[in-house]
Structure formats: structure tokens, C-alpha cells
Amino acid sequence: MSDIFNSPTFRLFKYEPSFLDGVASLIDLSPNLDRYNQDKTVNEADTNSLRADWCAIGGDLWKSIEKHELESKQTTI
Image 1 (tube, helix red, strand yellow):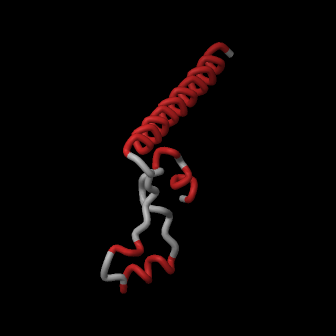
Image 2 (cartoon, one colour):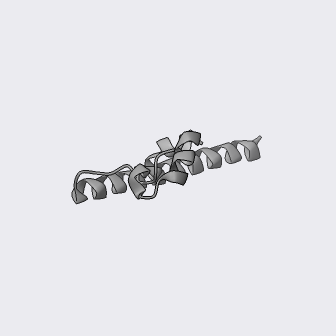
Image 3 (cartoon, rainbow, N blue to C red):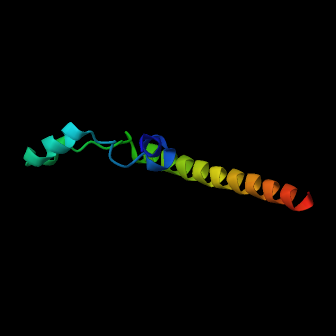
């Protein structure tokens, strides 16, 4: 599950919680324990989000290309 949180797509989501974080959240009456990956400016957030989107698109394209090449090799044999 930690691979998901290291993905650029999930950079704005909450960090990966531990068991102790879960227990501490039961007694936390304010959202002081909630930590998110935050950018310093709006422009930085937009840039990082666009970069993450294009990384996800690029990864999907590469997987599709590899799958197509593998399937085309299997059909020619």
C-alpha cells in the first residue's frame, strides 16, 4: 500500500497513517493530526498536479504499448 502513496497521482492525499496515528485520531478533537502534502503556492500546486497527471498518462500509454507489442508477438508466432 505504500507504493500508492509514493505515486505522483496521490501526492495531495493524506499521508499513509500508522496504527498509532489511528489511535491518536480517536482522542484528537481538532484536526491537528491531519497532515496533507501541501504546496507553497497555488501555481506550484497546479504545476505539480499537471505533472502528476501527465506522468499517469505517460505510464498508462507505456503499459498499453507494451501490452500491444506482447499481444502482437504472440499472434505472429
